[in-house]
Image (cartoon, rainbow, N blue to C red; front, side):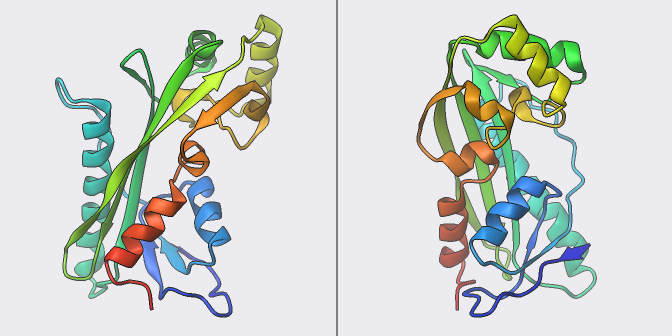
Length: 204
């Protein structure tokens, strides 16, 4: 477990982030929030005939619930925030690539196309109430040359990224337009996450 330093004048009391993602942590830090990081451990296999939106909504709720159960058993009733993100092209979810070849396949498919980034956000409050929503952003890639794709793969940023890219890194030059929440593409729709915190009464 890691703890952020509480910033002066923080608007929120500490809560738990059920994710080890450094991108989500940096986004929450940038908003001046105080939280502990306690990653969830749940299977991430999609259900039969489960839509991408239903999948991320369910997985975010399961991650929050799994961490909440563990912490409640230790007498810790703080709110738990969780999220799950997927990249969708032509209705097909593109998960995290298993290897370089799979990452290359994804980037070739994304080249010159518009895809969706869908994130489910779930906050469990101290009483077990669930708050959150699903956020969708449209992202258009420029046409990518084989050399551009190989250079990106060489940099290694495709690892552990849904769709094989991270918009906050070198892939930023691949993105022609973003319609919707930019922070959603990074990994956490920050506006909606803070709205969930406020809805749950976490805000002072």
